[in-house]
Picture: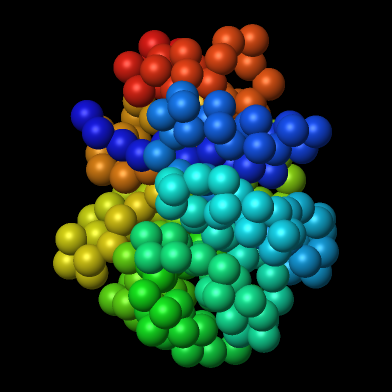
Amino acid sequence: MSFELMASMMCANYRNLEHEVRALEYGGIDSFHIDIMDGRFVPNFAMSLNDMRCIRDLTHKPLDVHLMVEHPSNTIDLFIRNLRQGDTIYIHPEAEYHPSTTLQKVINAGLIPGIAINPGTSVETVYEMLRIVKKVLVMSVNPGNAGQMFLPYVGEKIQHLLDLREKMGFEVYWDGACGADKIKTYAPLGVKGFVLGTTLLFGQERSYEETLRRVRALQV
């Protein structure tokens, strides 16, 4: 069973961000997940453009930039200019008047286009966009804060997306309240990757290397 593991960097220790990046990279993380919040689309602030730039300079691993902002078309060029091929930008379709136009900017820049789907957003409302994105990030909790409870009805939505992925040409990723039980259940079904935060990766007593090894072996 093969799946990708992404580190939710809003959960990292910001007293030494460089050490966190180096330790995660050494430990075998696949990519770094960057949550950008504007305090409007979600009721919180998280990472900044400068945080993203810092991490981009520190690693050759891909970045997954999750824009939880209103009207991302207004600022997306700032992020595009500071990323490189292999990096992903997710937008929330609910946050944009014309999300396909914003996604086209990502595609034109040679980056990987993705959409993030809130727990209350149905697959039917984003169906047409599934044909132009490469990644769908399913939020299993309401976005904006770490450490929230899993919303069980999200499982049905994930199954619906997995049924569509080959036809539409995208992969499904999990974000929020990701414990070992979720990986054991959904990785075999076809979920491609999991964003790891405080549930499995950060704040643990063991090293990132050992934690990631246990996650990959499903021995958490």
